[in-house]
Each structure stands twice: as C-alpha cells, then as structure tokens.
Image (cartoon, rainbow, N blue to C red; front, side, top):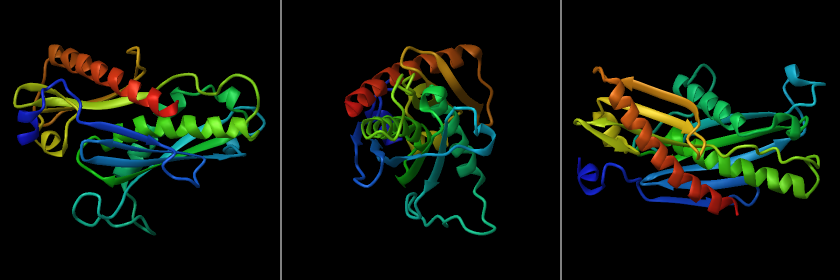
Length: 239
C-alpha cells in the first residue's frame, strides 16, 4: 500500500475544487481528491414534485453516475432494463445530505437537481460528490437569486455540508481512503457532517471483521478533522 506509507494516516489526499467549471450550468464545480475527480453541476427548475405542490416549499435531489472509463474498465451506461443499485443508493445519499443544507421554504416552489458524474474513480467518490455538490448548489443559488429566478428573502442555504471517508486498514485508522486502502480495509466508513461537527449521516461497516466502539470514536475524530479542512476548501470555492 504505497500511498498509505507516503501519507500520514490523518492527512487528506491533495484536494482541489474548481467552481464554475461548466459555463452552461447554473452552478458547477470540479472536485479533485487525489486521483478521484467528480464533476458536479446544479440545475434550478421552477417546479416541484407533485407531493410539494401548493406548499410553498422547494426540493433538492441528487443524481450520481460513473463515466464508462472512470475505473479503468468500461462501465456500461444506464439503459432500459439496466438498473445500477449502487448509483441509485448514492444518488439518494447525495439528495439527503444536500437537503440538510437547505431552508426549503426559502427556496420557494423550485427544485435544484445536483448531478455528480465521476470522471475518474480512486476511492471516496460518494463523499467527493457531496462535498463538490454543495459548492455547485451554492453557486447555482447565487446565480438564480441574482437574476431573479429565485425569490428575495432569506438565503436558502442554511448549512455547509461536507463529507469524507475513513477506515481501519491493517490495524491503522486512516483518513480519506483511496481505492487500494478501501479494498483492504477491515472497517470502512463514510461520514457526512457540518463543519462544526454535527453529524448528518454515518455509513460504517466491518468488512468481514468486527470492531470496537473505541475504533468508531477514533474514526469519527479523524472524519471531523478531515471535514473541517474540506470545509475551508469549499468556502474558498464559493467566494
């Protein structure tokens, strides 16, 4: 595991967030964490799902997919009769996480769709999608408020949302797993939180192994330190 040997266990891989990467999108960001690259775009639509009509509340949803060559072997594109359960599960996670960031009443009767397309996958794609998706969401809202597509009033963005992976590999708690580390992990964990440490969602599992509560606490501390640093990158990107 060359990367683990080179990188301290509590250090993120190199992170770069490029806002407004797609000129034609309402909001966008390219997030690069190590060799993982995810393109996030946000689209504002002046409608809501049927169950929210006449409520005055808006909606935020996410969609996730991997480009055919993102993993080194060709992934088949979605099509009739081909359901990708992993992509569906991650799409729902992105939507849940980003809705936590929002004041849906301040959003009004509008929907924001955050599309996250993995260009290159080397671990942590779902957490990168949430972190970059928040930047794309904020940029889309800023543009829509400026040109009048969203109502005046309170800012619909109520929280900053960030996510990171971590795990136990060879007995060591490691932050921000790459693909090789993730594959060899005894415990794998994805954490979504606010920068001040309030948890939004925690996904953790023992990979054919058990683990103690003390290990969970250690991983949560690692995740919080990583999320604090990622949040600073987000803040710089939305400025």
